[in-house]
Length: 212
Ligand code: TYD
Image 1 (cartoon, helix red, strand yellow):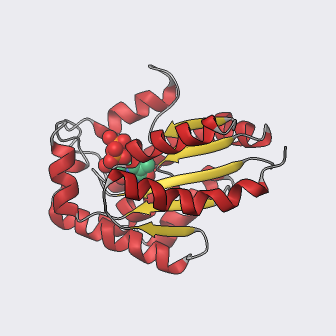
Image 2: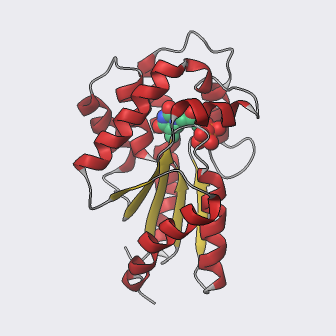
Image 3: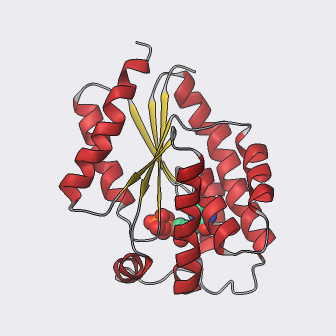
């Protein structure tokens, strides 16, 4: 594939969406074709991915089991990979994702602590057909601070899962980064502008890989 796939990961309230917007703007100003996505979700209101997102984030669904939860995240992911990420990458675009497979490992694997991490990896492989990002930026944030930030917009089902859960998610993410240091770069919390600069230092060298 000729494009570039960059994923953003991190706890709730870690500032991923702001950083994605800044990076997309910077890349577009250099003339790059950029597509942005967020998981779980789709690309238009009411499409299957957005309906799955509504189920997953609605705090009324307290009865949703861990396996069902994981499979719903994977269903949303599978659809995005097949219908959007692969075609965009084949067309040579830069694909920026607000969350991808590592979120399931961190949240449903380490966070829920019911399924093994290997089981989550297996479902990720099935959903993505083995599509691995070129770069993953892990915006590391203390869960208490992140949740306080996220709560400003009202708590969704995952944010309401408690501080212990979010502490495990953070540990999970750091383990993922340790296991794959080539792909996953940890970006410590800092001002918006300095995080953006660290992000850029990781992204810029990859632009040479794009085939014109
Ligand atoms: P969202 O409002 O997009 O949160 P954020 O802005 O923090 O990314 O909600 C997505 C929530 O779903 C978030 O709490 C993380 C969670 N999630 C998982 O638990 N597993 C997954 O595979 C994905 C993609 C997200």
